[in-house]
Each structure stands twice: as structure tokens, then as C-alpha cells.
Amino acid sequence: MPALPQIYVERISAQLGDETAAFLRSMEAPRSYGLRLHTPKLSPADGDPALRSLTARFGLTPLPWCGTGFAYDGETRPGKHPYHHAGLYYIQEPSAMIAAELLEPQPGDLVLDLAAAPGGKTTQIAAKLQGEGLLVANEIHPGRARILAENVERLGIANAVVVQATPGELAARLPEAFDKIMLDAPCSGEGMFRKEPEACAEWSTDAVAMCAARQRDILPDAAAMLKPGGRLVYSTCTFNREENEETIAWFLAAHPAFRLVSTKRMWPHRGEGEGHFAAVLEKEAEPSDDRVRPAKRRAKSGKAPRSDAAGALSALKLYESFAAQALPGYALPASGVPLLFGESFYWYPQPAGSPLPAESLDGLRTHRPGLHLGDVKKGRFEPAHALAHAVRARDAALTRDYPADSAAVLAYLRGEALFDDRSGHEGAPSQGWGLLCADGHPLGWFKASGGQLKNHYPKGLRTN
Ligand code: SAM
Image 1 (spheres, protein in one colour):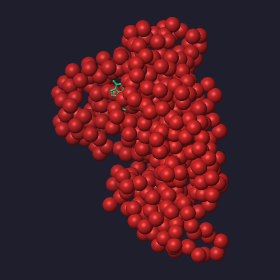
Image 2 (cartoon, protein in one colour):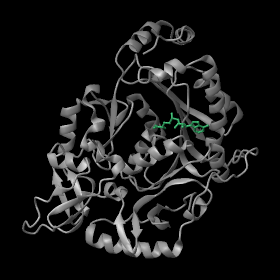
Image 3 (cartoon, protein in one colour):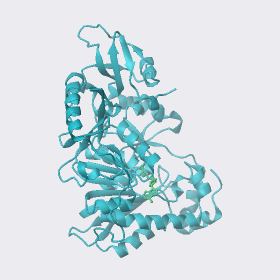
Image 4 (cartoon, protein in one colour):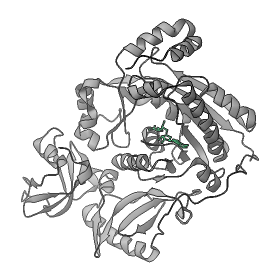
């Protein structure tokens, strides 16, 4: 890590007093590493052997503030393991897990994650929703929105929509629309110094002031999208008061409909993690005059192609006949509608009371309009990789299951075709679409024919 700027040390000393020396010592210590189990696929309570294997291999230590979160030994690289490809966990900085815990999303809630990429809080919220309700994950930056969509896909989240808009554009479309809102604001990243030395090199008092100004622009937009009685968590991974307590005080002074429920600070010298701030805000139950900020008009945030309604119905028929053969155990989430964009066929989440029904997507740049079921090519249905992650092995008619560290799993992740060593075994189907699994957890599709498993693991995700 580069040397801490003198002015930074002075500011943190004024803030921390007696604790300054312990804080500065922690900055010299190795950074911490964390992962969070994605409970729809792997729960700490369900006795899955994958969890025993993870605990032993990565040296998992439970985190007190997140029941599904663990610190791990940084040498062990769990991001490279086949279980990561299977979406069993998300690599997340330990203290960052506090924010979604404080949001307390419940199954059925309508939730917005306003600054969502790469998806730590989005995936944590999704696990808590248990597939019920709606999660709108927004990211302003196009490249980061694509990574967010990939992470949502890897974890098999069906009820999330990934959009790319400015907070102002969303606020104009979606006044008082959500039960819960996460605003993990862009910040000066003082809690990233051990993890990303560039964050330290780029730090300045001007950068802090600029971040605070941007936060004060975004927070009222987030607030305008919260329903009366709803909960908003504002969080940052920085330590200074300007971007944290002072931003919240500034906001509360201008928004009397809100009250501060609590604040939480995580420090690297007090516990595991790089440090985080979170403030829990609630909006009073009566509708307020805080609905839409008058200065901001409804704006189109980008081109979004319209779904082909007739095409979507024929695609649904093709999907249904595919699913009857290949996924007899899987039922599409009840509250969804089919959407077809070109060849790509989606199941769009539309629970009761959704503020973002499919017809309202017009003009909103949407990276992931729900669960990508597959593509329709020349009248044939080809399943999407996202679908392989949204189902369980037991839903499929044809699976090939190997130990996670077997040669077959590693070859599959490299994109190689596999010899089907179980073809012709009594009772084992050996033709058509099937799921390649690691210790019972789907990694992706293959197509079996003539004793071979043709590899359909996406090229962009293959290992070397
Ligand atoms: N919540 C994410 C997670 O847990 O993985 C991390 C979000 S990161 C702290 C803040 C995000 O805000 C970045 O992805 C960044 O691209 C986005 N951002 C930057 N400027 C923004 C703006 N003016 N309005 C909204 N989001 C912005």
C-alpha cells in the first residue's frame, strides 16, 4: 500500500482520537477476505457436503453480523473453484455485508438497489427475498452493469431486473415505488486502501468533497422512490464524516418525512473487514410531498427494444416443450410474463403491485429483463446458461454429476467436449440437453449424443 497522505492521517486522528494508533497498525496488516453463501443454492443449515468441503478448503470463519457470511484464508482463491462457477457463493468484503442485513428485505418486498454493480448487495438482497417479490438492480456504468447482470445470472436469481439509468431518470419513472431501497453510494473509498492501493493514491480532500456532493445529488432521488413506511439504507466504504454522518444530517434537515433509525460503523482495527458505514432511514407512513424532485423530468435513459408479443407466445410454447423433456421438475415462477427480444426469450418477474410492469420498460436501458430462458433459432429452442443456474439438478431429466475437483468438471469448465462414461448404463438417458454438475450443483448445459457430451459452457466464462 502507498504511504497514507499526511492530511488523511491528520483527519483520521481527529476522528478516532485514542484509537488512531490501532487503526494505523491495522492499515499495515494484511487485508481481509470474505465470501457469502448464496442460500438458495447452499445454506449453512442444510448439511450439504459442499459446505464441509468449502469450510475445510478455504478455512471459513463465520462473521457475527451476517449469518451467511464468512472470512476466508486469502491464499486459497475460492473465486477459482468450480463451486464459484456453480454460484454457491459470492466473494464479498466482510464488513460490506452489514448493509443488506440492516435493510432487512423480506420475501415479497419490492426492492431497489440503486448503485448495484458488481452485485454484492444485490445478490445478498436476492437471497433474502427467496425468489418472491421484485429486485430492480440499477447501475449507471454500462460495463459494470454487464458484470452485475453476469453475477445475477451466475447466482440463478429469477426475480431480478438489471437496468442502467441515472438515479434522476429512475426517480422520475418510479416515485414511491419500493418497500426497501439500498443506496451503496459511490465514495472516496477510504476502506479500500488495503485492497486497492490506487484508491489510496487517488485520495484527496477535493475527491472527498466531490464524492459528498455527488452523494447529496443521489440520496434525494433514492428517497423519492421509497414508499411511505419504507426503509432505505445508505452505505459507503469510506470513513470520513463528510460522506457519512454529515451527508445524512444534510439529507434529514431537508427531508422531514424521514427519520434516522440507526447508524453502524465497521472499522478495520475493531474487527474483520476493510470498513463500512451504513445508515438506516425510514420514511413516515403517510404519503409525503417528496414524491418527485421537480427539477428532474422523466427522461429516456436509452434504447430498449420492444418485446415481440406474438413471438413471445410461440417462444413460450417452444420453451414448454423443451422443459417438458429436459426440465420436468422445474416450474417457472408464477408471477412472470414472457418477453422476446430478437432471438432472446426471457421470463420477466411481475409480482402483484410491481412498479415496473413489462410495458413500462420502454425507453429504459435493460441489461437483463428477468430470467433468460433461452434463444429461439430457426424455430428451435436452445436453453440459456442463466437457466442452468436457476434450476436444481433434480429438476432435470439428464444430468452428469462429478466431484468438484474431478478431471471431468475441470475439462467442462475449460470448454472441452466430454466422453459420456455413463452412456448406455441401464435407466440412464443419454440423448439431448442435460446439466453438468459438480457435487450435485449445476454448472451449465451439455448436449448428449453418440456417447459424447457437447460442451455448452459459455465461451466468455471458460477457464484456461
Ligand atoms: N453495491 C455494489 C456492491 O455491493 O457490489 C457496489 C457499488 S459501488 C460502491 C458504487 C456504484 O455507484 C459503482 O458501481 C458506480 O459505477 C456507481 N456510480 C457512480 N456514479 C454514480 C452516480 N452518479 N449515480 C449512481 N451511481 C453511480
